[in-house]
Length: 571
Image (tube, rainbow, N blue to C red; front, side, top):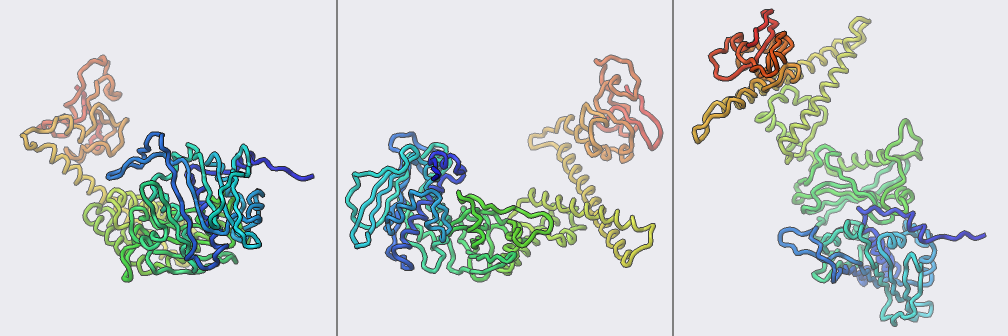
């Protein structure tokens, strides 16, 4: 008994993320390129493929893309993709009517591209002409939709030349709203998705993307965005061969980040940001042979072709395989690790220059802004810390701080290991390990001391600004100065040890059991006071105790001193 297939069910079960809203159009473009290949072979010069963006003539303007010097655009309702390829021959038509066809399986095709058309569009109209076996020109026209499936159109116009026009109509709103809007952005999306065809020896046919306001040639994008020097390398991962095409893109706002493109079936499937994945690989690179460039890599292999998902938005490959995997158990991490090693070799010169520039940036920042990292800077460099020279001070501070924490964690673990062996028979090399551990701890302590001194310097600078008059002769309010010394209406049970700066008044005030500021006597547990809550907050006794009675500001209300063993009477 033959099985039947529900087109509506297959479309419903086909995945198309809104982030890939233009994928149906890209499928039509690739089909057109393959049709041109089938007709002209390696000679791409006669091949032509035109993509027309159709916009609504009645709906409201779309302002989501509007920027300086740009006008609002009408919403996109559909696309036309016209090629002069081999056309819908009887063999191609039979394949179209067969879901999951293996007609072009040797090209990596899965026979599901037309399902993506119906996922994002209400209907598709196809007009085509082809040469039959006798060399006569034949025409074919039909509609394709979920409701009517494949419906021949008897009103087909007489064909003028061999080729096919695919009209994608009724762009569904969720995908329409998520798709790129401008002709330039759409052209760039098509170019990057199909760049593999531009990189192959025969190149790509003449491809244009146009709407009513302008047109973009994809062949010109190749010259505008890509330097002529290209490097092709092969790598092997667990017995599988992978091809890498490395490009140096000319600088533009769109390609500031280095990227790895995972490809299958001669098209891009996944795009991955490589920023910082290799030390020194940030934004634009420089070398002696070219102007600043952005590195991108296109990775392909038979293994990726056979493991790409039907919707071509991801791969059926585990991100990582735990334990010791067998040869056939390859993970994305296995491939990525080998690719990054090859990237580091390909870009050895530019990466070395970028690392030196990043190193100079770190030293300049530490010298002028963050002296606490100077004692451990050499150790952080040994950990492989590499920074983008254009990184902001705040981001650089966070990066150095996080790596300092890693160094402290390493020192803590090493300390437990080394000191745990002190009472047993000490193994060979113990003294050297102990010396390295103590040197690391010394550097970390020096860093802590530098941070402590730097923080105090900052606090004193803030205080100096607050006690001076401004340009109008006005002084800061007392509350501002008081809060710098000790947060008002709090006590030591509510704040951390670093929240107060009583050392400005007297270093000895750092040693206390209890401290309160602008609290009522009854609210302070050490006083035993029975006064009601409306009583006036006590403020002066601690100031007298600290010997700071000549100061103008208010000090904490009550302090129990450890160094003298006495308690102030709160007033």
